[in-house]
Amino acid sequence: MSASHASYIKPGIVLDMVKSIIPELTTDLHKGMMGRVVVVGGCKEYTGAPYYAAISSLKLGADLSHVFCTEASAPVIKSYSPELIVHPILDHSDVETEADQWLARMHAVVVGPGLGRDKTILEHAKDGLHLVTEFPDVVRGYKKAILTPNVVEFSRLYNKLFNEQPDRSEPIVCLTKVCRELGNVTIVQKGEVDIISDGENVLVCSNEGSPRRCGGQGDLLSGTMGTFTHWAHTAQSKGIDK
Ligand SMILES: NC(=O)C1=CN([C@@H]2O[C@H](COP(=O)(O)OP(=O)(O)OC[C@H]3O[C@@H](n4cnc5c(N)ncnc54)[C@H](OP(=O)(O)O)[C@@H]3O)[C@@H](O)[C@H]2O)[C@@H](O)CC1
Ligand SMILES: Nc1ncnc2c1ncn2[C@@H]1O[C@H](COP(=O)(O)OP(=O)(O)OP(=O)(O)O)[C@@H](O)[C@H]1O
Image 1 (cartoon, rainbow, N blue to C red):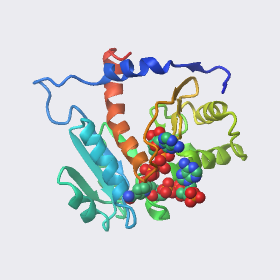
Image 2: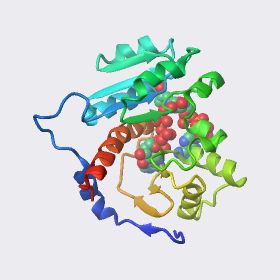
Image 3: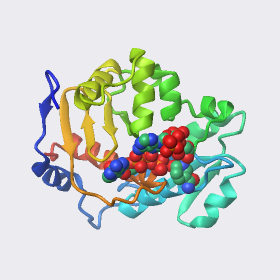
Image 4: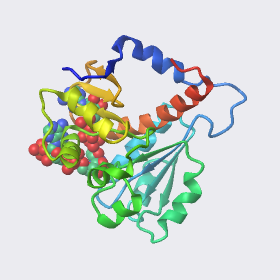
């Protein structure tokens, strides 16, 4: 695997990098400082995906975890856990006004788990990997954005941007090309080996995981990344990240 102009981060140092951003629990913290995360997703068919994402952000260490979902999915998602704050707003006509009241206070927004394909809801949510594929300008140039496509979602995105299929023998070249095309957003391309890049730096994670491929593993990943993202930006602003 090769990619011109990209620098490779040594996998061995990743644990130290991650440790450096985990905030210390101290008695001067107040509720919310460890993270207020919102998951945008949940529709009639999919209630598990937003739950997995929201509960994993909380279990990792965020203080408050919200879900923006549709009316039909809200009672179901609420019933899974009293810890989640569930807003049944995605199919409301004034969703943007309702969402804005909360979004201003959030540290991270995870868009997509169980969002489904309803055009009105996708239009309201203004995002999700499917919508990024349809309208790449939604994230173009927003360097804080992290996309987590699986193999199929990455191929669809690549095809949309370059009108051809990615070359499976050159995954890093293809990945960095997409990151750069989207203005250096970060992409975590999931698979047997996870490849992470912002178009300039590349990290290949080949640690062995479970061979079981059940649904929902990507949702757990996106939820935990919501919390990690908040911690990473906080550590960076304090200059304590490695
Ligand atoms: N409990 C819940 O509520 C859950 C809800 N979820 C929600 O479901 C929604 C749809 O998500 P999705 O990923 O299943 O649908 P989509 O993108 O159409 O892909 C399906 C197609 O892609 C293929 N395929 C997939 N992976 C592949 C791979 N690695 N390598 C190769 N092929 C692969 C696969 O091909 P096949 O194996 O059938 O030939 C199939 O045709 C989404 O909103 C999500 O959030 C899930 O999070 C699960 C838990
Ligand atoms: N073939 C594989 N071998 C080992 N790990 C894998 C493999 N494919 C994916 N993974 C891991 O599983 C996690 C979820 O990736 P996956 O491709 O299942 O996402 P997804 O299809 O978006 O999930 P979801 O079912 O939540 O929508 C990633 O962290 C990735 O590292």
